[in-house]
Image (cartoon, rainbow, N blue to C red; front, side):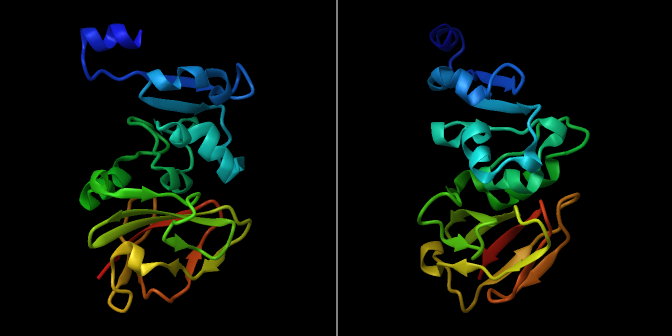
Length: 208
């Protein structure tokens, strides 16, 4: 099928959609097809708020297999999804992705290097195992996604490798833009604590 489609329409995409009803998980069921598809839409029947970060990474995101993924059931969890570059699809009544897409476009996320929380050299850490950070790094500016698995509201002070980000920590500011249905606008100094609500998080610009 991949070869036939590529001959008939070069550049076409194959999108693999499934849910949790037919097996122990679609990633287990369909892994053999991953080399021939472009993206995943796993999530129907998924309980996003109950899934561990490792489950998100392996069973949902597609990242370990070189694929992108989108969220589905009830729109997913938009804060945790950002750790994996995931949003719901449009149209989706309970989780409109366009406000987050607007941030992506303004930042230029397509030109950034994604360094996920699972990478040993991730340049931003929260200092807590239940509040994770993924950095989208580009020259002069970084976008950081924070998301919490902590059972209660918590505060974190970010541990930042400024050299890896190519930024001067003495001049940098942490700025959360206002994003509809996601977060209010807020600014911190790099050493200030950041309050994170359970099952939520932040999108934060690091810039001089």
